[in-house]
Length: 123
Image 1 (tube, rainbow, N blue to C red):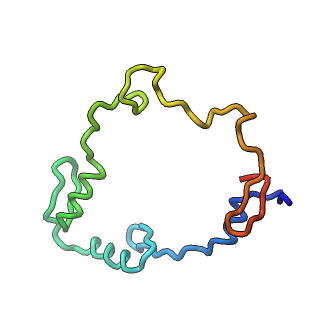
Image 2 (tube, one colour; image 1 turned 90 degrees about the vertical axis):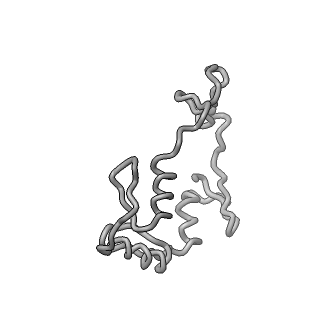
Image 3 (cartoon, rainbow, N blue to C red; image 1 turned 60 degrees about the vertical axis):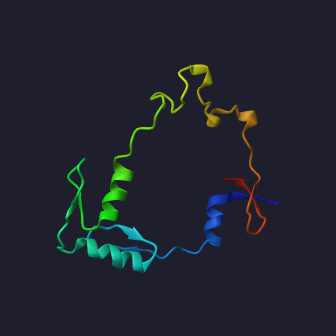
């Protein structure tokens, strides 16, 4: 039997809501209370002695500065083409977009729930 609803809506019934902990100062969300507790220390008036040389950011821990630089100021990848992320300059070798498949090649309905086996017309 195929149900008329969507699989995504149905999956919500199998997955209980996730408890989150929100920072009252900046609104950042954490899945673990201990991570929020650690984060709250960043809002204290402790001196931030580790300054980023590439932007105005400052940090109270060296490890946070290193993480910031790695995330916000990564070195450019060598040999990468700016147009398509490929190392080739030949357009015929560019990646094809898998989302542009003809309608006959797209799956039609029959999306099965991996938890209970029910099938749905829509994803």
